[in-house]
Length: 208
Image (cartoon, rainbow, N blue to C red; front, side, top):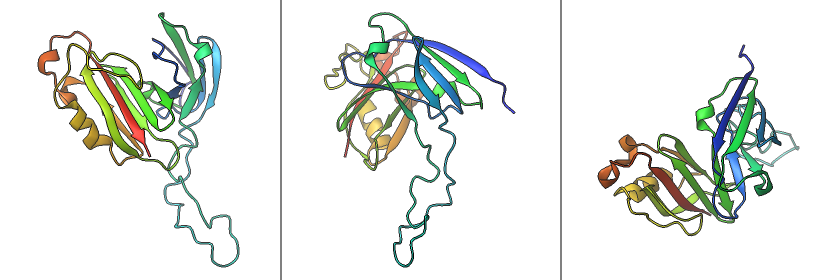
């Protein structure tokens, strides 16, 4: 039995005007607030059994299990954070009440545009990209580990950029519905950015 646990962290509002979502796939069951505003209850670790899905077959009498999908997947992992809840240029607070365990280190924020997904995390955290519905990540349009500039749709390489990151992200993500990359020098390399005290990984991808 897991003890009830409160988690609190601060984060900067993603730049731009695209919709913001938070990925709670790593958590168990509970509720979350951003700057005191509720973004809802979550229970992403409640999943359909992975062995219950069979190929769709509509022959013969109707049965409720004639066509099932999403087995082994959470019912919901992305939770909308209205821009009106966020404060630009100052720390924002995320509070999570956890009832059933979970890994808060996997929680991350993303911006979303139609057909395009973006994520931007600081060194040491995991960056997760995920397409909605049946779409797969078809291309990686931008990937930089160092001090990338700009916002989703207009990312640019900054004064420091580790070589080979774009190829690594493409290999890990293209053709997948979701992928996760740990933003560390051990995974992505350091190169000329090794002396930076805190690097960031920014990625923009297309889903289709």
